[in-house]
Image 1 (cartoon, rainbow, N blue to C red):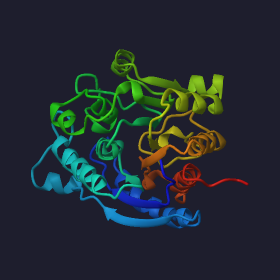
Image 2 (image 1 turned 135 degrees about the horizontal axis):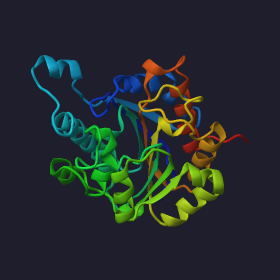
Image 3 (image 1 turned 120 degrees about the vertical axis):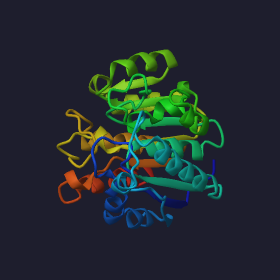
Length: 296
């Protein structure tokens, strides 16, 4: 795999998949936190490709449309399809960073970069492994990883199924629905909960992740709510007891040292709930660590 020198940033200002409004402003918050400038300081050539088109929920309501079943399924599907197509059109060797937006966008990002067998590292307080039958809310941001593994509404799986569940590893999980627990076991997905983080430590977990996904290029999908809410209050669905500042950076640093990470999602930043954009700044710092920033 050649060294990565070119980065493409693409925003998805979407909160249609979430139960709480505000993460549609996440791409702007991440840009305001100087994502491009921080990456350019690492010697990378950065191009911002703007945003995928996403309708605003209030506009859909004014047109008389209502969410039903899987909330806003067709609108989310269309935005994720546009994201998938735009990522597929990138030249080989470009490292895409997708800015969210709620986590349902990752149906488009992962399927868009999966031109070959791919390992997925899903760093999140939640597994996002619900289906319409198991979801308590019907919100699609709780379903994208299941869809990518072939479970869920046919309108989504036919467009976005892209990964072998045995090539998926979750890190930092601390909130699961009962149906997700069953499906994760049945599908053979590897899950490191915060219990394992506390017991084993991030360094060992990161090495085990790389060994389990040995030989594969990696996509990292980083949800801001994996961080402890005391560090990152501006998230879509906060859950107490998350990763610390150093744990999160160490995970990114070890993944970076493997030289195998080829794409990244930064999702679920909610500026409405944030304090002086600190959550977006934290995510930019983690992205920098993943793309090669070092202490020494």
